[in-house]
Length: 198
Ligand SMILES: CC(C)(COP(=O)(O)OP(=O)(O)OC[C@H]1O[C@@H](n2cnc3c(N)ncnc32)[C@H](O)[C@@H]1OP(=O)(O)O)[C@@H](O)C(=O)NCCC(=O)NCCS
Image (cartoon, rainbow, N blue to C red; front, side):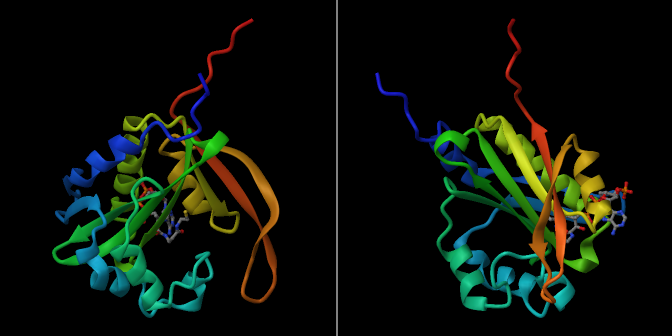
């Protein structure tokens, strides 16, 4: 039989549209973690609106373009990119995506995360990353990968304290708006390791 190249987890991802996690942070803030849906369009645009240049430089996409952000909410394809949002009241205060690998990397996903500045350092980032790891485990992934620019050691630390291991620094991968290059640190959470056999 031909080995399958399709991701083994597509059906499970569809069930994840029902995923909900309610958390109360130590400071009393109540947060709902759930997948992004088309109804979140305006709240997602608001999350990414009016960010200063020092924040927008960390995005690969043109985050200041509301049409682009609207399209992410309007056309979610959980099997390709699984988006989890953190909601406080009726505001989206954080967004995280799992970008599924394909073909020979179909057992891996890359995680990206962004929190509104006024909701950082309350434990929400850690809660979202843990939720995405739980989801990755449920759908049978082996590795969750994050790329963090080396000039943000506190962010690297945030991943390391959740079990991510520093693999290597990709020299000069990141280019700032001014054209300066920085190293990108690749950290991986190994959910499943190959058992060594001799
Ligand atoms: C990185 C980010 C997701 C962390 O989420 P968060 O909710 O602020 O982090 P938490 O409150 O869960 O804290 C986790 C740990 O991160 C570290 N940390 C995060 N931001 C930090 C900062 N600005 N200064 C110092 N430590 C920091 C701390 O070790 C902290 O643990 P502690 O509070 O017990 O000391 C969030 O700050 C963010 O969205 N930043 C901008 C976007 C970004 O850098 N994304 C990562 C690229 S994939």
